[in-house]
Image 1: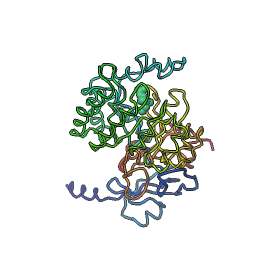
Image 2: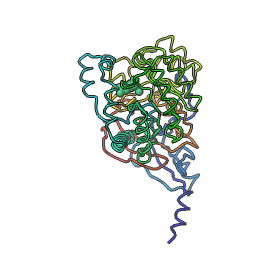
Image 3: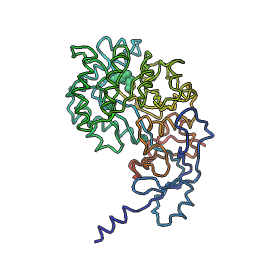
Image 4: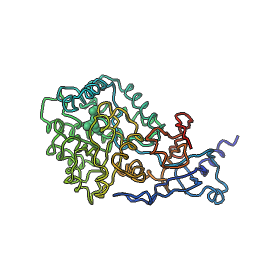
Length: 432
Ligand code: NIG
Ligand code: FE
């Protein structure tokens, strides 16, 4: 009885979630440049009113309850701090196999480039990923996406780039699409067929990119497997000249472009800015000259502390990029080679101590600025009209989140207003 009536009333039902000890809505903050912690809005005893997965209002819990007496209450007990779900705008989590042997060589002193030149590195993961069945790839990706979601990451960009031929790049992108129906997080796919010149391709880099452009990108478009194209601009990968032609062609086909730039040598950031790329990612090698290019640009500077930690190399100059006016996002780069750890919050917190990034800048980089790197306008802050993608930490002061350098994990994670991860596990007990 009443099934239909129940359904209709549920659709229009408002839910008020709270009270939270503090809410950081991250609204009304600048998209570019340095941010002072004084600009952080902190709502004490806050609530979020949600309807159909979207935020209607964020504010004082008691006032919202009085204003919307019809709203169903989702009560929060104990001390919890609410922030927007994190957006990891750069990962390579669709892969099979392990590169533990690369890592053990690196900590004995071999460099990433030496391992690449000797036939290991990315190519090793290509070999292992090509051997994996599509269903295996989907379940490996799903496992990683679910781990990320439980750690507060509600949107995850995922690159191909371990296929490097028509069939295997499509296998990866279809695996990402399949996983997107199964995971609680939103997955944003990117074609990284230009990760490396495949060792089994007999022509030049230009010929390979030409083939990708003419054979692979049209299928990706037709099947709607990705709307973004990435390239690794580096010695031993692709130079700026062939990269320019490829990226311009991809843009002409309607793809957003992004670049693995300035990881070991410069050139990538300059090209990304010149082409109006959505983002330039890595930037460990960027110096004053490159940093100055970012001024006035809408290309998001994405820094990847996980790669610095995994390779034992310097961080990207995040402080200088912000001071130069960059829109700075922080992503995990989670991949089997340079960044196997995949703990986004831990990486951001550790980098912020070294680079002197304030709490507001770190949270901006993990949320609405990362959304801009993906050109997503419907998420990243807890303001009216945004998707209710949110996470709550078991503490009473938002500063605890970075203070514990990643060991304090969210106890609740919501996607589109629905509580999808709820756990008391993993608590770090906080001595007060
Ligand atoms: O972003 N630098 C290029 N690509 C990845 C690493 C991929 C790998 O080593 O498997 C990165 O660090
Ligand atoms: Fe990467």
